[in-house]
Every structure is written in C-alpha cells, then in structure tokens.
Image 1 (cartoon, protein in one colour):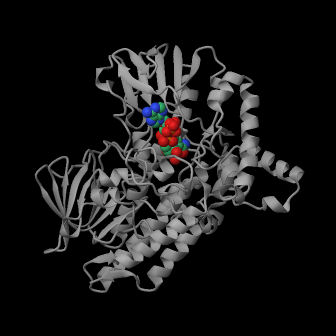
Image 2 (image 1 turned 135 degrees about the horizontal axis):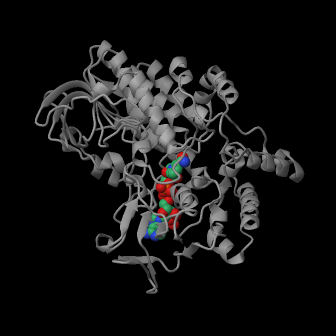
Length: 544
Ligand code: NAP
C-alpha cells in the first residue's frame, strides 16, 4: 500500500472537470483509469479515508469474499491480473482491500482521488450543460459528466432501534467498523442479523467473545465454504487460466466460472442427488448458481433442493431447538442471497453462543445496558453488533441530493418506483451515469468486478462517442427506460426471488417500493443488449 501523501483539492476550491466519479471502490477505480485513457480530466470523490469502497468499510471480524478470488478481479489487463497473487481461494477483506490499493498504485490513480470527501449534492445546470457538485469538505466541482460508482451495498441501516444512543457499551454497524478494530475478547456481545455479514461475524467471534448472543429473525440457508490456502503451484495454475476467464466470464450468467450442466427433469432422483452432493462438496456458490437452474424458477425443484440443504443443516446441528431457530422454513433456497459459511452452525454448539429467535418476539429497544425484546426480556450486553444490512441498490445514490432537469429529485423519483435504463442512466438526469445501480445484473446478481468492468467500459465508450460526435449531452428517452423496466419486470416475475422478502426486492427498508433490484436475465444477455445499443449509435438515447 502506498504511503505517498496526495494533496487534496483545497476546501472552497471550484474545480472544472470533464468527469466526476463518485466512489473509489472496484468500479470507481477502473472508471477513473478508463476516463484518463480517453484523454478526459477526471477525479474521484470518495467518502472514506481510504480506497476500496465496500472493502474499505466492511472491516468487521470474519469479512471475506465468497466469490472465488481468482475470478474476483478485473480482466482487462493480463499484467494487472498476473502481478497480483491471492493467498486463498476465498480472500479476506484485508487482502481484497490490499488488492484494490495495488490496483490504485499500479494504475497511478491516487493523485486524482479526493479521500474523506463525500458528495452531498449534484445539480444539473441546463444553461451550461454541467453538473455542479458539492462535497462534505466544501469543495465545488463543475463537471460535464457524473459517474456514480456508489456501490449497491453502501448505505448501511444503522439507526434501527429506539434507545441506541443511550447504550453505555460499544455499538457498531458492521459496515462502519472502526479502523482500529474492537477488542471484544471475553465480552458479552450481541449480534443482530444473520445475513451473509452476521454469519461471518458469528463464526469469527464465537471463539473470542465471552458470551455471544445472536438475535435471529429470519435464518439463512447455510452452505459450507471449502477454503484453501494457495501454494505457488496453485497460483500459477489459476493465473494460466486468465485468457479462459476473459472469454467466459463476461458472457456467463452471473460472472462466475461455472454454469449449470444438467436439467433436473431429465435426470433420475439418484443422479440429481449425486449432482447436488458434488456441488455441495465443491464448497462454493456453485451449488446455488450452477447445480440446477430450475431452482430459480420452478417451485417443485426449489422445494426439493431446499429440503436437501435443510437436512444437511439439521444433521450438522443435531439439536431440535437450534434447528427450529436456525433452519429456514418459510422460503426457498436461493431466493435470498446465499451466503457461504465456515462453521457458522457449529458455533451454536459452543456453550458460550446463544441463539435468540426474534421473529415473534422482536427487538423492541436498546437499553443503556443491553437489548430489550417485545415481551420485556432484557439481554445484558457489553457490545452490540448490528449486522442489519443496507438500503441496497438505491440507497447510496439517493442519499446524495441529485437534482436533474427542472430540479427533478432522484430521491423523489425512486420513491415512486425504482426505474433506470439498463441500470446505466435515467431519463431526466442528463449526463449522469451509474454503475451497480438498480435494474442491471450488477445490482446484486453478479460477481461484481466482472459486471462492473463491463458497465465501466460501456460508459467510457458512450461518453467518447458523444464527444467525438460533437455532442454535449446524453440521456435515455422516457420510452427506452420504460421498455427496459417492462422487460426487467417480465424477467423478474419469472424468478422465485421476486416473491421472497429480502433486500433483493427492497422489502428490508420500510416504505421502499418493491421491485427486484437486479436484472435477472443474466450478465451475458444484459451485455449483449447493451452492446447492441452502442452498435446502433445509442438508439433510444437522446444525444445533442
Ligand atoms: P442482510 O442480508 O440484509 O441481512 C440483515 C440481517 O439483519 C437479516 O438477518 C435481517 O433479518 C436482520 N435484521 C435487520 N433488521 C432487524 C431487526 N430490526 N431485528 C432483527 N433482525 C434484523 O445484510 P448483510 O448480511 O449485511 O448482507 C447484505 C449483502 O451483502 C449480502 O446479501 C451479500 O450480497 C453482501 N455480503 C457479501 C459478503 C461476501 O461476499 N462474502 C459478505 C457480507 C455481505 P431479516 O432477514 O428478517 O430481515
């Protein structure tokens, strides 16, 4: 990691730019590189005090990838790929953050990144065809284009319970974990939430905390991760696969290096079981994404695969009370994000780890000394960890006061219904591009670097096209946006995840309009459609 101090844009300064990029995570870093390659003046504003986006903020104990590390990389440069070596099949947060710092240094990006600089508002000025952007440090940026690479899981749900401010112990949201760490050894720790984050926290803290009390509202299906440390031979082997990854991943369903090979209904029950067992033993997301595609659309197949996982979970727990709390009963496998875990269930077999069901007896308040449930029970705690998730997809964009043409507020616009053209632009917001935004695979259903790289490249080519053709402004027509939303909804209606409550459909945030956030037609199909638009000279987009 570079120690070089880069001068920030001074407070009060007004900076003129071609392109302002919001966020220095996986997407923003590559977007900056591309903009420079196109000869444009570009700068990143990043709210964090370091780069890495998700991988900067989510430094809670146990945080790690559940995409396989070799495929969690950009695929645009053989050299960038090969000069970085992962030490494990599923890398830790620390290693992923280090990789992104390696990327920033290799591409010499730091001098164009303002850290500790949150964008607070961005207002389109039709008279000069520029965005005026204000930041938390009092800088003003005037820019032709804004590319919001804010991340789809960057707006944490922090203030969730009455009394939080009065708690006398330590209270953390996992996505705002202190950089200095937290000493939880021997303490009475409460964890709220058992999504992908809560699961990682629990398995990491079970050996550390004095007493670990886990408040479980909706249990997740647990799929064991098979992690391995890479030897020098393993590293060479995965690196030699680079060209193949480059060919396969962008056109795959979800940016992963596996695809379903069999159709459930063509096989005997014995053969289905063999395949399920083999995918389960692989210890990756293959079981979810590449065992049988029917599990996403066919309730009967889904029910059988769900029963397979439930039986595995019950066998691991071998305890009726714990199974009642920790094994999902009322939704199908894979209709919420499937987390990989490593000893999560076994943690509850330790005497210091306690599962408290809070569906029918919800958490009512934080008291000065613990958590109180609706029935009045109080759990005394020294520390509370909120693994309560995010206002996903829309949250990080809507927390910025974007004002498009005629003062149109993005926040208000999305409150009526989440809508975008291909997750890339919106009618009414000229020259505003987004990555990881709703209604694209990158909003949830993709191995992120693969889908983000594609969006970054599409945006860079699009801006180049506009400028080379003497244009100043690009904006999708209301019609193409409507058509995309209709197509998105049609695909969404065919998949079971639309019917299950989770952040995938926005139901974890009170009052958020329900719509499947990610395009479920596959990264490959999405890519084809976006490339057709580019090849047609951006038909459906108004350029002037
Ligand atoms: P999440 O999946 O939304 O889980 C939030 C958890 O908090 C849920 O169990 C939820 O219960 C619970 N919760 C929220 N409010 C509550 C309340 N008032 N009372 C009790 N429980 C409450 O969020 P997450 O675990 O942070 O994960 C979000 C996404 O981040 C993941 O799905 C994944 O895409 C990504 N992630 C990835 C990795 C990785 O790649 N390794 C790791 C972590 C996260 P309900 O389900 O009942 O609402």
